[in-house]
Length: 205
Image (cartoon, rainbow, N blue to C red; front, side, top):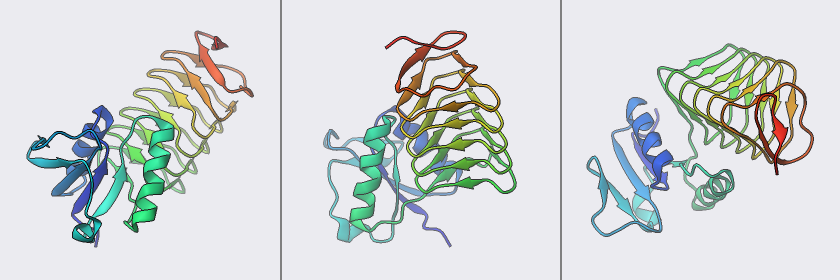
């Protein structure tokens, strides 16, 4: 039986989305940890603290809720070092296909779709309404933003980000460390890190 208590690392916008998702998943007690927390701060009655006395929280699971990919990977490492269970949050309104896999520490938002045999590595964000289709692969700590799409048999590398409404078409590979801007369309494989924008997506930085 899963713990009904969850420590959320971070207190930015994505952390609040994570809290919404955690409550939808059945967690009843949330605690935010953020080094910039103000005394007495709370979110819908759930406390926000700047540090943990970890011996008091052995009944809790933990979730990394930084929107920034590198920061989220650091949170996962901190959770591991604290010896807390690292969990994923998968919305009850998401659809998850047969034979697919979701790594620890992932966020799968409301109305997201993960197709059959798709693979999502550790610490990824599959945000609200995003689609990762059949046999697609997503590397660790990647971020697939709201209403974006990775078509079948495509891949998105580790620490990459697919902006809101962006698309990777069928059978295309995107390297690690790539950011595709909102609304961009990737129609051929990307092998170099950088920022890509437009239709079709071209390197801008």
